[in-house]
Length: 301
Image 1: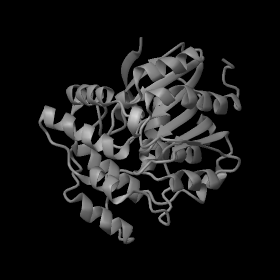
Image 2: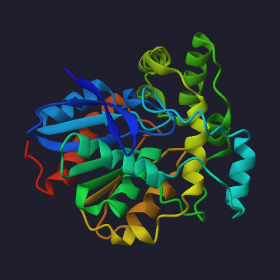
Image 3: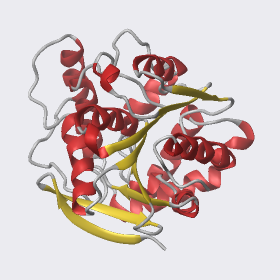
């Protein structure tokens, strides 16, 4: 069973849960844009714990049960994003560096000196930033369906970008249907798409802490943080880059660019995977994560 708690980290409140033996090899799981710690399925975390890892999942700032930045509204997200992409100076609430410092603060609160850092989508961007800026705390790095922030990479298809930028309905059932519809656009296809699981997770997220306001500020943080490509050359820990070959939200080019930027990084392309982590693919994904961690001394299980 997960152990739930809240701690002060980097000057804010962070909600987190842990799985497995605290004496195990620590693994910090960082979730994506607007998603709560629930996006790391509890069963997925338990499987990591069975491999000997002490798995830690948490709510990023401005989402879930962690500190919300209501005093820093972003009134017109498209206008702010346009200004940032044009190189204009914009006062933003926070950046990915702040979010990486939050993650480091979670480890500090748990008295974990260093951990295997695993991030998905925006979480991959935060994980990359963590590995650059908190090198002593990173044992290994796994970046999943993410990118370097390189502006030369055309990331999303028009359909996926439209899904990302469409505001969420506020009514519960409408929100769930909206999430399912978006998942059909950006997620894996055919038998890998599990509508019942998507629907259940959306309902759980809505009931736990529905807070769409933070999504805009997180999106601005991504764009305000610029490219990490050159700085990623300083990452020397074992690195795995996982990416689906049909991901329309962060296209495969983003993963390839990430692997090219990090010395010695291993690129694993998963056929048929979109912008999600389908349950049938968990064994392969967990095997790859564990194999990468083993290069830094993870338990051999």
